[in-house]
Image 1: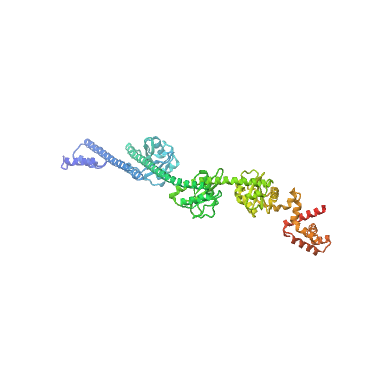
Image 2: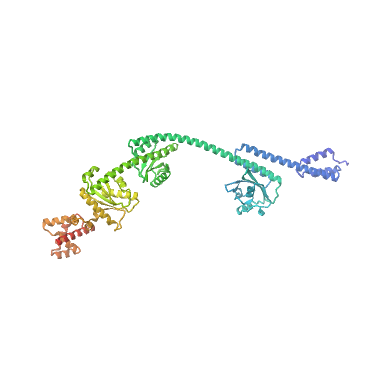
Amino acid sequence: MTDTAVSPAALVREVLAATRAQPGERTTAVSRMLVEADVTGEERDQLVAAVRDSQQQTARLRRRATELEALFWTARELVRLQDVTDVLRRLVERAHELMGTDVTYLSEVDNEQGDLRVRYSAGTVTPEFRDLLVPAGYGLASLVAETREPAWVSSYPDMAEAPHDAGIDTAVEREGLVSFLGVPLAIGEEVLGALFACNRFSHDFTPDQVLLLSAFADHAAAVLHSARVLAESAAARAHAEEAYRELERHVSATRVVGAIHEELTAAVMSGATVIDLVSTLSDRLRRPVRAVDEAGRPLDASADTRAALPSRRSLGDAIRESRTSGHAVLVQGEEGARWLVVAIIGVDRVLGAILAEDADAATHDVARLTMERAAQVAALVSFKRDAVSAIRAERRARVLAAVLDGDADAAALAVELAEPVVAAAVLDVRGHEGALGLAAEVVGDEGVVAVRDHLLVLAWTTVDVEGVTERVRRVLADRLGDPGLSAVVVSAVEGVAALRSSVDRAARDLRFLDPLGIRGVTVRSADFAPYHVLTSGAPDAAARFVDGVLGPVRAWDERRGTVLVETLGAYFDRGESRQATAAALHVHPNTVQQRLDRIWSLLAGEADDAEFRFRLQAAVRLELLRRALR
């Protein structure tokens, strides 16, 4: 041994230090010291090899300790499981650190089809990859999910184990990834997702790497499964609590609604109307309540409300929806107020609706249930009212029909009407059932309605016969679905005989309208006066027409011995020329003018009214014809 020989103690210390160092470190120093200690070459090589093996074992144990520490951390986090998102993100980061790969990411099953979407990632550089969706059946992720086994490829572009997808390939290319290792996240038979470790170069993954990533995947699967179980448990508990609260609210609301329903029923038994029901509801619910007809018109126009009603269109939609569902419908008012709307449903149609302002959300359920009960009570009130109205209308219709047929006199109508009949109207309701009841409802106490054959006859006590008849015609046209429904009115009816003749005349006038192409209007019978003579079978029809138009002129001739009628006939025969008329009568033109002035002063019409001039000519010709035939 030389003077510079290494002491045994120093050599042992160096060998021990080398065994604890990282692989490849301090082996040169150990080899040099062995040379200085005169250790032979073969022994020296064996000792250095042993040091290297020890270094590898030590490094493996250190790595295993780190891995176990990371896995213990995830286990502790899993037990606490306060924030699933944070736990999984940190799990991916730990796996990324220990795997030593370029990119690590976790994909979770996104839908029932089995598509996988990237949820958490570490080491990625492109946003497209961080939210990548892998369709079921494509890519390495689908292979891992289907086989429930780890899978890896050293070169993804050359992968043949699973079908490629253009979108996935583009995202992988932009991220620069080449080699992939994927392990499933499975609980029992269910696959929740997959955990991946990737490099941007070709790489063959070792069994240790597969085992390590699989351990992290098992923890991630446990986290996802636990989170799902906790969420389902919390949802079930919340649902049960809400169901219990809802039951309490329903029982409380039912008690209140039952009390109000009893009060409404008692009101009906005492003869209350729909308006009375609405007033009771308003008091009990402490909010504005209104009633409308089927067209959305308020039944009580004088009622006050704190908010404007919904528009006719939105109200009509709500009534139709309520009729279909049988429940109250929430609709927005014109000024921001919300209204609960429930339809009053009859046997075959909507009778109207009840509206209550819905300003108090706390009592919404009570108001809704009360409204629905009230609508049923209102329907009963309407049935009762309609039944009474139908009996009354049928009785009055029989009386009017008897009067028109000559089986009763004016005294019978006087029993039904407070005022005498002064006008009549006729409508053709052929093929329309229910026209009598509808008309009687609209007419009310202003007249009497009857049906003779296919004609609806209205005997009015009001002088505004055209206005009220047009109102009835519009309602019938709308309710019966016949926009072409027309009516003829006769004014100045005096006595039963005049009523009968007026109805017959109006019926004949009604037949004129279709040939003239006139539909959907209300017209006056007086407009057809010249044609009554042509269509009437009465022997005195022509005389009455002539007397009605020309009577004052004939009376003047009879009293004064003048020839005003003859002058008027000659005037019309000669194209209303005064010169030609004067020549034909052998008088001066001024005389003709004086006679014409007298004639126009006696007549009820105006000289510039073409319709009156037509009637006047017809009356003059009929009078001159009558004189000539005599």
